[in-house]
Image (cartoon, rainbow, N blue to C red):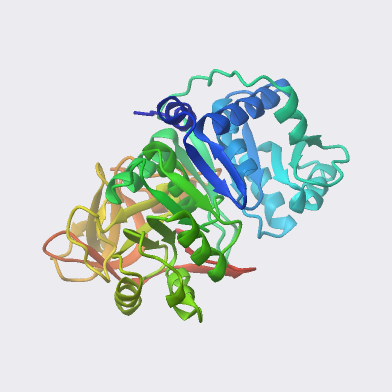
Length: 422
């Protein structure tokens, strides 16, 4: 079992070798190919001076380059700083400064922003993938063609920071949730276990990988040896085609994914018979949507829930267990829920009564970067985390969210909820 983020891909490559790991558009990469590519990127980063504990930004839409860079950064022992490709330059500037990020890898689509950040002194070095002029940046393609494909991941402890993920809320400054290797790996393990993901699964997802839900799905696919078919962005027709073409067994998405698919004029013309499971999370999934999609697609829908402060997905309705539409299911293995009096969090409320949802376990963040006050307000000394969600727990331990403090991001085609912890 992988203990750190850097161990996930090498372990998968050793087990699954030339089986297809990732499909993006018409590009297919095996587990071995993806591992070698990430090694070349790790060697490139080391050559420019990246050391364990350094912060390295990653900016771009879903692509094989993003995935290879993600694992390449992890292998150097650096701390990942995934950045949303939808953010304005001033917000990105704040995030990289707050995290202490001095090196960033990104796509040519974000080249202008990255060059601006470097010119302003926010970054020392930028690396770009894709077609276009690199300017004073390093071309990722040079590393991929010239650097060695051999690299031994630098040792890190499970308690060391692995990722600083920012809560891109609509109010106040974003906060950087510091996620340990233990938390990132546990989120992936739970995501694999609760959905019973296996090496026989072919999973279609348009979740942005810079978001913790998307990265949980990515890491779970690598752990399970599944084929991940990722879309650069959500499009109803493209997702339906991908399911039919690849005989997909699973979809990961947000509730609006399924609303939009159901509304597509040609939904019923696509062969979706290969699907065994659909996961929906990050916003409340209406029971009506769950039941209609299950009826028309012929596979069950399971609701999942999570937070940036919990390294991604953190609870789900399990595939091997009762699926209760309208609930966020049970906490991941090794974790626990409590529902407490919002005014007195040391006191649990009776089952069936509303209160604040608390979470404890290996997924809980280390704290907010450079923000001890916000950390103290969110994390209790005993390790329990305030989610800010008002919930009801039933007699079986399943939780239903009845009210919650949620920042919604609706921008350029991405539609997902991010709990700010504010």
